[in-house]
Length: 249
Image 1 (cartoon, rainbow, N blue to C red):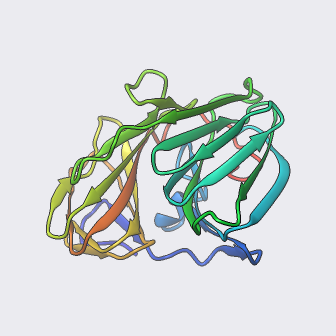
Image 2 (image 1 turned 90 degrees about the vertical axis):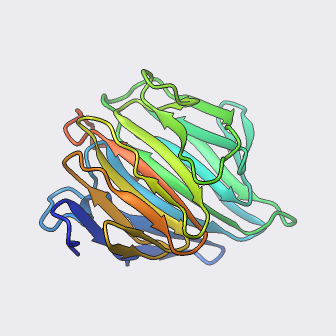
């Protein structure tokens, strides 16, 4: 759906989902915000996956290649084991970036006494094929209400974690009736997703799990109608990309 603005494009909750019982996902495709866009992704941002895992769930060892996989966990914990011997716990205080490159094996699980997990797994297309496999797992700054928190970006950014393409990622927790401008940078477009709550952006209403794509360097203010949690991506739509990722492509 096209908003009243010439450059803000809204998409409803995705209808692309998979239900594996204790593990459920909803796949958001940023390119689908634009009508007749030939690519399901938008430049280097391939896919944003809303994932649910019940307690006592195992996603057994599997391989990814040629994609950067970011695990953002605002609710619950996600336990990661991999073929390199890492046993990592990602939760609201930590972020994980897995650069699968030439190949990376991992498994994910929750334990019986873990809370239900709702998270985003973000798939970024790297700039080159078969890069060295890497993993980053870092503490992140405490959130400050009504302020964007910069969590990953290219290696030239000041974010605590990096990805191998021109995408910057932010989150914000907005109090009801508070406002904040979407992040902006010359030459970048903004894809944003409402994780919780309801907001208005440029006179357009967005509910939980809806998304917007802002193009052409506009500045837009987001106002929370309820307490809300949003994420936003500053994307260079013309960045060189590879499209051979295991999931995002």
